[in-house]
Length: 296
Image (cartoon, rainbow, N blue to C red; front, top):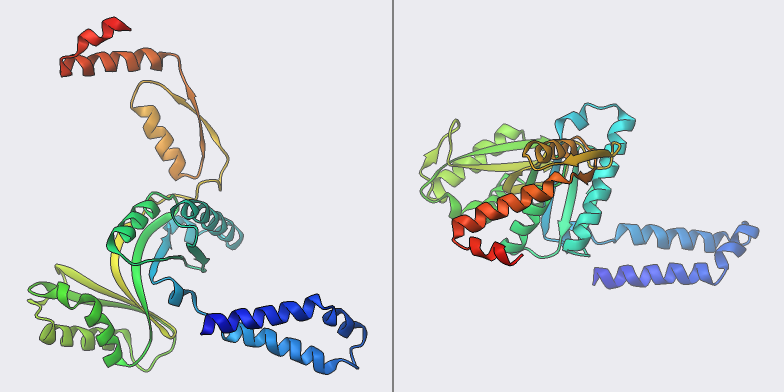
């Protein structure tokens, strides 16, 4: 219903603009003040009723920047975050054309349609290979309520996984609320201990960590955390020429260059051909099919 309403209002505003009424109102500002107010009202109403991205895409990932990006100056940090956002959009376009990337000051938010585990695992593996990301967290977003509401949301996500295991609750909070992070940890942890069948609470070495992030009026429950590749976003530095020989060190050097945002241009030496033929001979000898080389 909200989506249809947004489409109707957008079409109405577009129709008014196409009809030339907006240009006419600019010439006759005093005579058409009611029309100008109407157009502004429709535009404001459109933004007020727009559907949140999280309602459309239930699968959400929060990507933490590599620490060295966060300590850069403001212009450099913005340039690198924009480059990383563009890299992700190009990459995710091949994975799902409807995927969205939202740039924030301290992280990036990725929204992907669907919520099955196989699709989430494939998306997590894809994001973990992108330079510039330190940590990837798959989260579920809920509107923030009181402490009991927070517990019910956590119970629906982590309730069955905690049975017979030790756990702890960790909370990060941003904004002004009537409770502290410790209050949430005590309330949620205490009720999970007594109602979810957990083996106990271990604050130092738990089997499971229930991680929550509260940002203003939104609750994020972390379902899974993956390590990122680290480094700087690819393309934020100049390209480099990489000489690929038959050894192992050249590939490692290319990998390290990619992590430092330098896109390598590969140059293969002639010796690599003979090296590959030698390795092929060794492989065929091990497999017992070295006679196939005589038919080259």
